[in-house]
Amino acid sequence: MNLLFLGTGAGVPAKLRNVSALALMLLEERNAVWLFDCGEATQHQILHTSLKPRKIEKIFITHLHGDHIFGLPGLLGSRSFQGGTSELTVYGPKGIRQFLEVSLKISGTHLRYPLTIMEFDDGPIFEDSQFTVEALLLDHALPSYGFRITEKDKQGALDANKLREEGIPPGPIYKRLKAGEAVTLEDGRTIHGSDYVGPSQKGRVLAILGDTRPCQNAVKLSVNADLLVHEATFSGDNAEMANEYFHSTTLQAAAIARDANARLLCLTHISSRYGKEDWDQLEKEAQSIFPNTKVVSDFTNIAIP
Amino acid sequence: MNLLFLGTGAGVPAKLRNVSALALMLLEERNAVWLFDCGEATQHQILHTSLKPRKIEKIFITHLHGDHIFGLPGLLGSRSFQGGTSELTVYGPKGIRQFLEVSLKISGTHLRYPLTIMEFDDGPIFEDSQFTVEALLLDHALPSYGFRITEKDKQGALDANKLREEGIPPGPIYKRLKAGEAVTLEDGRTIHGSDYVGPSQKGRVLAILGDTRPCQNAVKLSVNADLLVHEATFSGDNAEMANEYFHSTTLQAAAIARDANARLLCLTHISSRYGKEDWDQLEKEAQSIFPNTKVVSDFTNIAIP
Ligand SMILES: [Zn+2]
Ligand SMILES: [Zn+2]
Image (cartoon, rainbow over all chains, first blue to last red):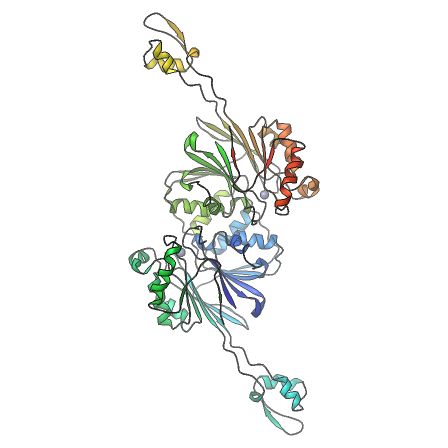
């Protein structure tokens, strides 16, 4: 599991930072990629990575500002053109359906894969045997959401070698042992699943937040998260401007990570007013509040252990 | 007057060629830029040029395929964000209005300049004292148009020095002389405007065509044009495939330029199946039919003398 930042700038594309997009690489977990936001030219950024558009299984949209969605119609079309045939689901706030349906229809884009568009509100928006995804409303100029992605705990593996060594051949009881049951064998022995199952593996938790002012839901989504992705459009001394434009400063984002007891904070959505020479300073000021902070750049790749 | 090619690829963006866009630089003529088509990431391409988005006065859309329009909402938004305040008009086939209105509304994009959207059909679509623009339907999978841009002839300049030398002081009669009239002076002399007006300057003609199979309207738009911009999605030996996908080959485009008696042919919309090493060959085969052919690339800049 790793996060590949595809666009880390704010508002408009700049030479050093494209507009927002972020790929959660779940290749080992489910041979799939989940995309979060899709600003214009996200597909162009992808051309410079090993990411295969046909592997994109889900796209989550935090909010409908152009710098977060204008790359969507093109990416969906190119995924089809390049041979993608597997289903894709786009989750977004109300309005994403009309934007996509009109864009695809007007442009005569015929997708050769099933596209599902889910408009969501506060609450759980996806669950399967591996993951849950929950959305909560943040505080921005138009409805902007944060996502809490929770990987389910993985049950420990059954030690089949040990069982075979003890003369217990494979069969239906393996399943019962794996579920932790006590089983009485034909020879009269009673054995306990817990003696043959390795330790379970705690699932990871990610919080990926859309544009926002500091707010309580940002903390709620990030509680004990292994990784929090938070915007930091402005430097610490620009709190007034951040408030006026419904954004956060580096210091405000760091305070959210601290209050939520997150493990690692990635700051993105950096305004182009800050040149390359300023990024260190942005990182340092956030670290004064939350030491494990990283200001990310386009193509930064973060492994989530 | 020069043409700056911003995107010269076909269908989907590739590393070496972005999707379609083309800037007609009219800085000397009217301190303005006209854009033809606006594929995704056109604004990103512009970042690598000296073109100022606020100078874009008109955008002409040949057809609504995604690789020709998906960069439009982002460019319009950024032009405003970057301080553009002058009016902008987008001319496009029916459907462009719905695409733009929905995209801008859904994304909460508020433009700080007047935007006019004109949906056109066959015929004249613009005229002022400098230029006329005419559109004609071509032959593509959805309605695709070509444009004939005609610069009006420029009247010769009045030779004020010569007039002053002959003792004819500036005044209302200068205007009549410039208009070619004969004027009788107070001293009884009759002088003729034609003796004091330099040669008039013939206006230039450009034909900029959208995606198309070879067709009669392509010739009609290009008759005696100083420059014809024509798609060449496929190489000469792929006429069958070109026909199937409603495109043209290099040879077909060259035949249009020859039949229309154009002066220079620029081939664009080159499929990414042709690598850098093939471009020379594409150019050579077109030159076998129309010698003054150039296969253009992203950022090729053509002066139109
Ligand atoms: Zn926003
Ligand atoms: Zn087309």
